[in-house]
Length: 246
Image (cartoon, rainbow, N blue to C red):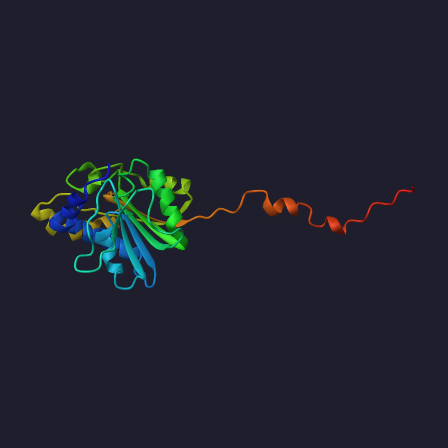
């Protein structure tokens, strides 16, 4: 079940814990996608806190917000680029998106396979998608003080298997949010230390969020088509059968 857009806005923009999440996740996203000059960038779910770095150089930025969640205008003080949509019927042309960021959109959906089908449809050749989901092994998926405590958490294997089943090819992955999901002053002051420590000891510490980058896989045609026509392409070079006397 999708969270309410006002709860998501209040968490990310009006709480110290939400701002810490913005910082940690945005750094990982920018590490994978440092720029998007001249490209079309779309986000689905509640991706607006992480789309802002692309507003200046991207050809187009679109924030898709599912109807069960609700929508807010974004960015403030600039022309609105956010739109309310059905979670499996996006108002985008097929194959026109270069970069697609999905956060708070997959784990909260009751039909994740259909959402992935729509992701695959809008993504263009050579494009890539980033899927950000709660880590089943992390602390953040066990705390209902944050949006990552709702919905269906994943392991990396579970997420990658689901992506492969929908014709995506996982390319790179990352983890973040090693800091505890606690708003206390001590934890907020030491947040950067926890992120640095987690990045070095990620075999011991479980990050609260999984990030997987995947590309669109296009399968080769499997129908009869040309193969039936050229099943024996050199048949014309075979000697002609001997003529029978009449």
